[in-house]
Length: 565
Image (cartoon, rainbow, N blue to C red; front, side):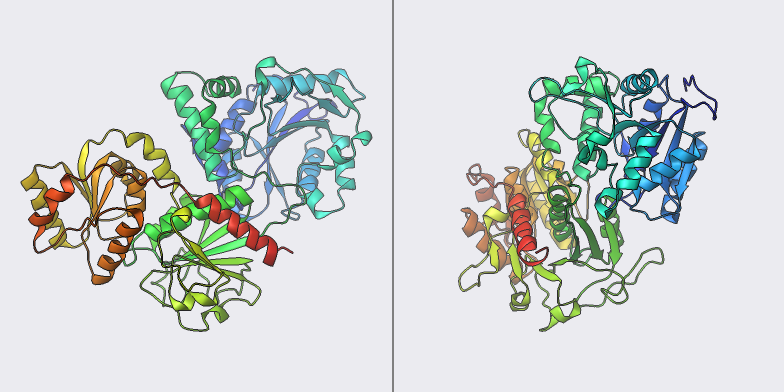
């Protein structure tokens, strides 16, 4: 890197401290999640190495086994690594100790979740302090109305300012953030104005990666800039793209930025998922959980007993614990953490149970949980659910006779983001039939129909990452009735039931009635009598909207009234 002050004893040493740990409650292991062709932390380091004013880059983490990959990364890239032995939440003290160890007079704080670090701006701020020896911090002015410098994740100060700020951080919420006392007590720190390039001003928007939505946003920007436009992925090119494509801002516009003293909590989702139960419940619950993380800033863990399900949860940045409620869990893999006694080592403010619709829990099931844990049942209308504080049914259901804790219907449909993102492919229906089938006799039946009618057919028999795109491209979707029927309607794909049981048939008929469609059912005995009528069905008139935000708001209100008061 282009260092100019490389003596450890030089009083003007400028050191960048990259603050990172791999146990983020909203997106675990985020520093090693990829944006384009490299991990997030590699983008940070590559950008820092373009600086002409920095003398050293230090990965600043916590001394715990989970963070060993950060130490290895530092070693592999020829960087120093500071391992803080103190409290994991004492960020101000961690940074102070690192600055003292590396004799940094000018300290450059770099947040480990901001890939778009701009080295020219860092150089300008460091130069300001080198030229103004009495100043403690460089101050970047705001721009014209509604415009701010897009320098998220960068803060520069003298070491003595960090020391003073750490001494004054006498409350936990001050310790666990990046020196908020500097904003609370600005009169204690002398600032010097520092200019900022005009191209770096933009309306305030998240450029950090704290959630899955943020990661999706960054990868979309990367694809647009590098793949389509063949430009470099950096902050000027990102801001230029966003001026041309403000629609991209919607990807993570809903993500909540936590306040310094904001109360947060933990939620446990318990989901029946896997080969026996399918993955529809998990996909729906994962979307709801991710939006809780993004919109409320709460931590969400999952309890599942299926390896594919656990990996899907972890891919979305949440922790997967092994277990089940009201039944014996599947055998636990050796590498999976379980909960031998449900809440012996974990406390959750709220539990959300997404129990398979054909399974009931025994009366008194709530006693499995601590008495002060809020309970929400998702999508199960059994009598056992009456013990919950809330029952949310994100699909059509019989409301008559239900108490005040019941809510649901078509306004509460959960449309997962993969389905929403696939909607632009729904205009090109180049597949006649997509079928999700598991019974061999049903596969043979649908293949016969497709051959007789000369239909382009795609069959899947398990979880598929490509399912949203295939569904969007299909005219018809054939399966036993399930939650994917709502996703089909959202994508203007006609859902057809090939029932696997009388209960499936009954649920499907109620569904068609509520959404205003004539029953579209394949008779396994007399299939040819029904198919021609289906082929001539008019385009869908019913339009479904995503009701996930509505559910999150209901949960937030419940949390506010019952838990965090």
